[in-house]
Amino acid sequence: MNKKLAAALSGGAALVLALTGCSSDNGGNDKKLDDWAKGACGQMGPQVKKIQDANTAIGSVANEDDPKKMQQTDSTAFQTNMDAYKSLANAVQSAGAPPVKDGETNQKNAVKALNDLSGAYAGLKKRIDGLDTGDKSKFSEGLKDIAGDISKLGSKSDDALKTLLSGDVGKAMAKQPGCQKTSVSPSASKK
Image 1 (cartoon, rainbow, N blue to C red):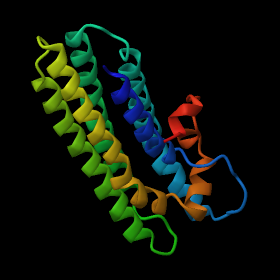
Image 2: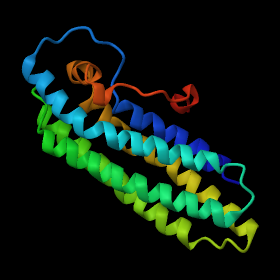
Image 3: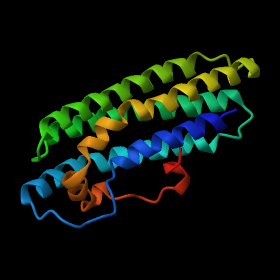
Image 4: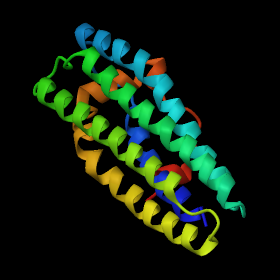
């Protein structure tokens, strides 16, 4: 029942991984940009880890036969994601605009995208909490609907985050320990 939800979250995990930058460390000796990246990544790293852990928790109950356990795990994970995306938005906001061309616009778009994700997870939490765990068929249908909506979430905010994290900004962030990729299964980046 929860496999589609876990698969949808894997797609959403690609969005989170965008926050962890690229593995490239070439270019950019710009001290201002490096300082900006250091400040942003110090705040972002723990939130990305929370999102990854929450998505892993959902995947861990993908084969669960107890709807109540699935509901509880998913609800907790959605709450975690809601809070973490809100914290990511605050981190990007408090870091200020990156010192690059269109940095302010890109920052504003990323903050809006992250806040939108937080709000979307609040809605998902409310929906999962409202599912009838006494009727496995209805519960399964509800999960399918939620999984479909999660799939749409990633594409909504992808562009703003990709723009913020492109070019020199992404390279500067990739050098920072808080933004370096943690071990995540390769399937998380597949659609």
